[in-house]
Length: 437
Image: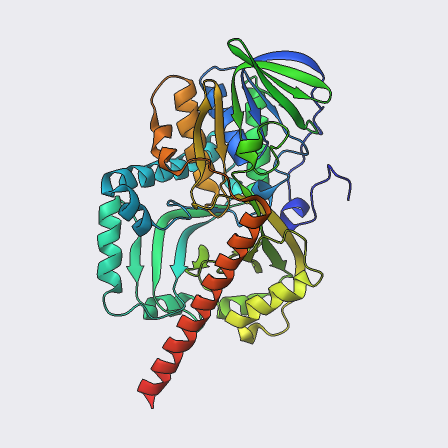
């Protein structure tokens, strides 16, 4: 694979045609320069172009090449940090405003598909977040109370209702969010890019940012072949920003997750999954999946700070599927690929002002597609002088993620959480068996 080709995936195999854009050459001027051609950068550029700003975006490979074009494609409100933890840390008013901003992100994505004239990019509606342990008699009341506190649309489903649409004894109760949906992420990224150009924005591929310097009231963003002069610069990359801003690059850890798509399973898939929306479980490194192309299963899961692709990735993903749906039996994996996402140890996005005219919109690993739009929306409003909603993210900051030691610490945390999940499931299963006998 050439460095600028799209990595092999089901998304790449089913992507729309798109132009091979030129790299940045010579000197240009813009109101805003954006570093990164993933969702954070694309939404920021598009929302500013819609406000009449002249935008120039550089991407070191191809538009949507990284995690934005390879992820699960889930669009839902909330953040990777659990809502209860955010309420405890920030108070209900602040947590509620953050949740509302994530809901705004969902609305931006939904509206964008309509404005782009691409309803086909949307592949299904609704999301179930399922529990692999019985949550007890108070689950429904707790869920409704949290939804009311946040101003959320999610609702509790009891076990019988879950198993009526998902035929596996692995799952118990679920939280249903009817406002969630799922999409083809790479095609959405390509459609956003096309719309930015239609609105007068400039996009440059194969243009790795090599330096950034403030000069008076403007910033000079350099690549090997050119330079952009702009009053504002938005850093929308992840841990690959070292040449531009080492501190921001050091605030994000590269973390790998994996996605696979099966061969066509046929009508028997409906014997196990009669739900056309997205599904994820509540474990920290849990499974997330959905039906695509009618009778294929797109399955994601696992988290590791080791970003090397496992040699037996397809078999590993097949085992994960069969652990939940063993009766699928001879299911074959047709595509399997890793995605490297940017992860902040505080499990929240990094959205805000670094210094006058320099902004960050990063660390969206584990959050979903909507949160990139939510962060971009807050920054675009600030750059346009409309409001300061970006300050909602201020408490989380861009502190150093620990470098190699941070990766080790993060992996140990994940292993501990996975062990806790396993022990909790095992203990509750034994207790249930004891009660039956």
